[in-house]
Length: 136
Image (spheres, rainbow, N blue to C red):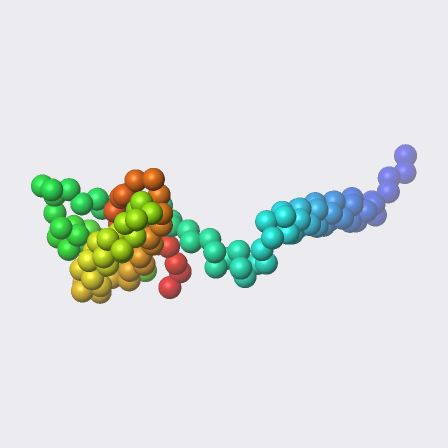
């Protein structure tokens, strides 16, 4: 019986070729999807304001703490960002901005990085999310 010991490199080469093919197909599919959206990589990154899962979430309640007191109760990591999110009806944009800025001022006074997001929506709402939104 004769065995051939030198054929294992052929299997390795076939595996690597298959992996390269799959990676290439996945990249082409991703590029096609971005072209359908009509945005370049830079434009798409700048338009997608993402808010990471919250470490803590604040909503103003009449009997609850102020945002300053709430922040004092949190374990704040210097890498975390407080995102103040205000949603508003079409005619109430200025009021939503003022309320969001009031929360942001209190947070900045404690040395916390703050991002304010104000967007139109069917209902008015105001909350803050403490999360690792951006790498520092």
